[in-house]
Amino acid sequence: MERTLARDLPQHIGERVRLLGWVHHIRQLGKISFVLLRDRSGVTQAVTGEPERFGLDRIERESIVELVGRVKPEPQARQGCELELESIRVLVAPVAPLPFEVSRSKKKLNLKLDMILDHRAFALRNPEIGAVFRVQAEIVRTFQEFLRREGFLEVHTSKIIAAGTEGGTALFPIQYFEQKAYLAQSPQFYKQMLVGAGYERVFEVGFVYRAEDHATSRHINEYLSLDYEMGFIDSFLDVTRLEERLLKELVKNLGENCAEELKLLEARLPEISSIPYLHFRDALEVLRRDYNRDVSKMHDLDPEAERQLCDYAQKVHNSEFIFITHYPRRTRPFYTLWDPDDPEYTFGFDLLFRGLEVTTGSQRIHDYNLLVENIRRFGLNPESFEFYLEIFKYAVPPHGGLAIGAERLTQQFLGLANVREASLFPRDRFRLTP
RNA sequence: GGGCCCGUAGUGUAGCCUGGUUAACACGUCGCCCUGUCACGGCGAAGAUCGCCAGUUCAAAUCUGGUCGGGCCCGCCA
Image (tube, rainbow, N blue to C red; front, side, top):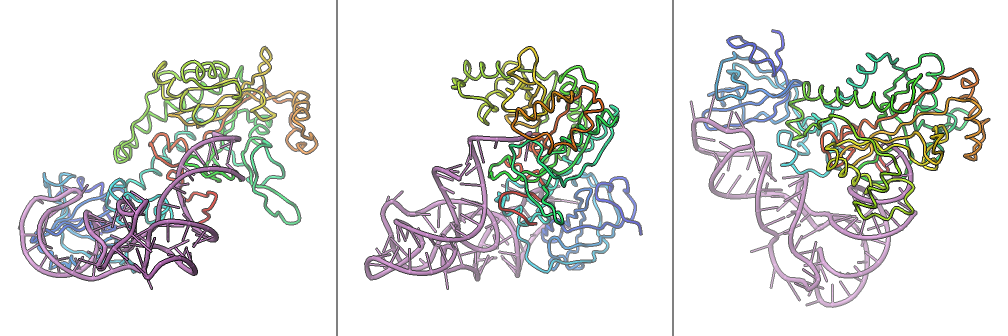
């Protein structure tokens, strides 16, 4: 007999079906008993008045079972129908006590994050915990499909590199045969080179690595970077406007395709009408005026400032997103183009969402001589960037791009307390397994 | 790199400040009862040498020192 999925039970009323999955829960109420079965599609229910006939009290939770029975309409069942049990067969039984329950809500379980991560694969059986990655998959899918429609080419660049991109961030050194190499902290150079290669518009979904010795609820040392880079732009606004359209589509898709997951996680989608922009200089003024911050020594935004600017965006612009633009030159890497009319400030921006930085981007320098000059100005040696610089000798169009932290975006959409909850197998300062 | 905090049954917590004889509660587990549960309900039972090592004391989960493990914030970043 063919397998029927839990979700599809209502389409088989009156038929005999076969279900395969895990025993989510067994509720025995004297003479009537319910077996809740979970598979990849969801949870369904089988019922029987003869629990002893099927030996239900000997079946352990999370056993893998095969259920056969007839589907009958039942208004008291959640799906409006349920399986009248004819047989139950244990295919695989657990050989150890379960570390914690699968069938309860995350809130009720009140598990410490460490417990969840130590038993990651098992924890994902919990529908709420598992839902996070169904949502994340939808975020990544939307990113890819939206950009493909906009004429972007999906690329995959090496994660093993010879030199760092941005200087500031710490790199993980690795031994590459007789050479010293590093794990890539960003696909930055490669995506720019591929714009120059003539693809004009490229995007990449890939892990990047940061050897930063931090331990906070918003940092992991390996994260999924959603990058795009586009040529022939008039200004960085072409980059941010595209992201705004991407985000609108994302909200729409999540609403349509992840309604159940969002409900389970009690997540509220943001409404995006138009995302406000705030020049860095004006952001400081807002912080000084409305939040009583001492901004005299503020050259970059600290986490508190990011939360305050989001609060401001909500109050003044009724937006949960805000673009902070024109970050000062000293805070941005050498490839960032500055404003010729106001050269202290760059065409670099961040997108803040619900108090957290989720995107960084900019218009880049495309002129070869200017780029070499700026590398020198940063105290770096252009010769060590020859592999990157070469294409700029042969004419690269004005271009810009950005990177979105996929886990952070997931975290903020779902209101998760810790970014690690949005990473399947997070790598942090002390965690290397599972 | 700097600062603050936490380790107690399978899980999550209380007790610790103010040391004292059976270490408490909830969920789970096990047993019995229950014909419509979906956080099922009722009754009962088992389960913890209080992270580890040392010290103080008649007496340590509780006080002190060390050690191991974990969390959060800042710097930096997505």
